[in-house]
Length: 189
Image (cartoon, rainbow, N blue to C red):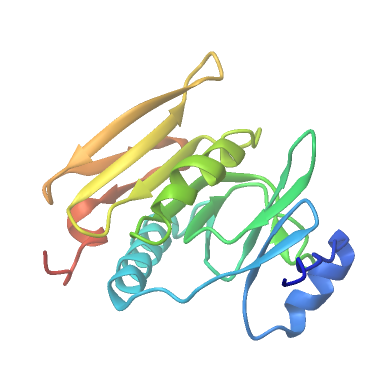
């Protein structure tokens, strides 16, 4: 008979302190910490293309883009969570001394076989509770397809789909757009 492993519950400050020195990134779900696996070259190339495109589109504007090394803090009624989205646009940034952003306007996740289920369920549900979030974007890695959840005037989210390299995702909420040709530049299908 094997013993059931005990899970150590970490406080938020302990988690944040550990992330400063850890060689591995960890997501935090109400005290439980989960190590993140590395991503494929395709995933990283798409993420990098998104960063370049958003960064260029936001140059000279008040909002700024953050990469996957920046955590987003989510305050749910039952717990605090920290995730590392592939990219996020922030118009109201947290203090420079913080290790996270708390008020993203746009969050982008690149989907892969290993992350799809978690991204489209657990993370999506948590992200959509962020009061400042205007647009949640999921980018497919195996075809030129982008799924968008956009907050409407009533506060609810509507789903949009953009397919094909000639399409662009309008982001008037942050005064830019994401062209699928730029997202998938040099990516072979």
